[in-house]
Length: 343
Ligand code: TYM
Image (cartoon, rainbow, N blue to C red; front, side, top):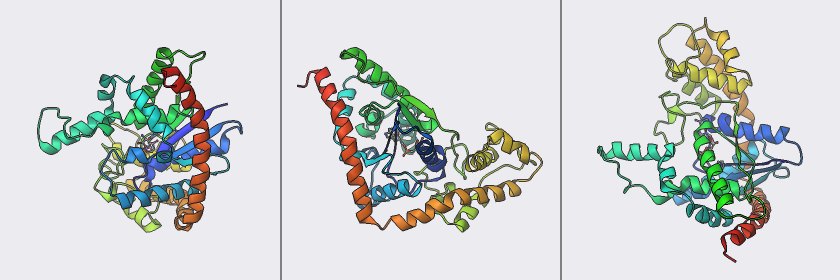
């Protein structure tokens, strides 16, 4: 049986990229997984702290993310759904993993390199300068590895932007197993579960992925956006002046992004979708994308509106989730402490 783990940061309402790249996949997994698979989904508050957060906004976002997970159809009776920041075993294991993680590996993480690049541009310096960035950002992937390994996860469904983090996690698991030999390798090497949709790009700048942190709100569609907003944002999506739509990620990222979104929303292969539009205009494509996005978003949006105010219910789900999560992680931590000699 598999142990499936994934996480999402509580940094605001998820956008279409999170939804198509990750969340939809979680629900699909839950629907299709054999009953003896253990499914674990976490809201990773500690990861959110690596960037400055307004404490009040964070506490709202944290609760709302739980409402989102339930709204999209995750079932707390089938899957363990919990707040990472309520389980100290994650940070305990993260510390131990930090102590076997080479700095050089963390420096090679593209997420770290892009943070460095941004801080460099902002200050207009050519020198690489880490002094402005916090250590949490640097060791972020180690905490992520701990999230995964603490449940002896075998499968991790995440978007392709997270692939390098999963590779690091495998390295650390292997390193731990070899460094601290117990009777059996303690950690399985978790696999990246390829999500069916590749990355969803910004609607305003298709050279970048759709992200929560872009200052341009028109660049992303949020799960809470109503039909009119969805329509306006897709109408404003940057494409190109070429007549006819073709799939070409290099030369035509904007049009390709719309094809990707349409394919993901309708559960079709992007190549199949693309052939339908080779002789059509961007206007027609945008109209169809709008309809498809509204179609997949409508129900989760309505469910979310219903659930977000039900604080009692949300708390009870969180309580049940954390108690199941801790029960599992305690077993791993006992072995880990024995392996490293902290007994
Ligand atoms: P986060 O919160 O940034 O993103 C959550 C999920 O959404 C996917 N995603 C995208 N997929 C397609 N297109 C996009 N534009 C896009 N933007 C985001 C991400 O791949 C991710 O699957 N480090 C993780 C959180 C985490 C985690 C973990 C995940 C912490 N611990 C353990 C798995 C296992 C992150 O930043 O997710």
